[in-house]
Length: 302
Image (cartoon, rainbow, N blue to C red; front, side):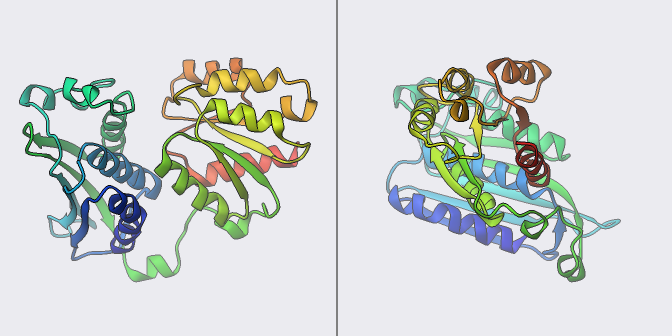
């Protein structure tokens, strides 16, 4: 857990510094080795810290603290995370609706903050799936505190030294393969790029569908091996971008494999992805092993 939190601190440090926000990550943990879905855990952190950073002005402060709040019982312990900021805060009435989809308080939209209010909804859904909880305390002008809890299986050092992990970079050979990663969220891009580069990929990025289509139109045959396409993006979403790519005259460009990466995992979303011309549909947060196996299957049958 301490290594995960140290990684989180480093990931956000530069962006916090750019915004002139005092950022600290602290922990009080007796049992440091735990079994946890790392990708989901990092997505929860990313959503909560990204949200705090978005609504905390320059000169503010954000503190992220993780504590072990129970002794080990039957091999499990309870861990609590607190993200406290000195941002714009929220009304009591809005706090009661903050985890509902597409909710956004008037003051935040007046400040022209980007997004459509799905991050906290997804965070709650992830914690529900992991058997955890989340709540929020806030006052207008006095900042907010988001608190989550997780009950995690406790491990030992031997579990780290001899992990039964998902296939790592050595399980696949992607050296020399190029991916176009289309993702509007900067932190999501950084995490995805880090993972993909570990597996040997060369990664190019696009911040929205417009840029992705433009890069494909200008690409030479073989420049990209496949596209990882987010769905919900500003300017042009993943569906429209895919449809435009499929209409390009160059066969290489028009037939490039496209994998949808989306927070929406309903059957209709899968159908919409396929109807737009996408080859595969994967729900966020991404299962890395499943993604690599899917990419390996695509490249072997390309």
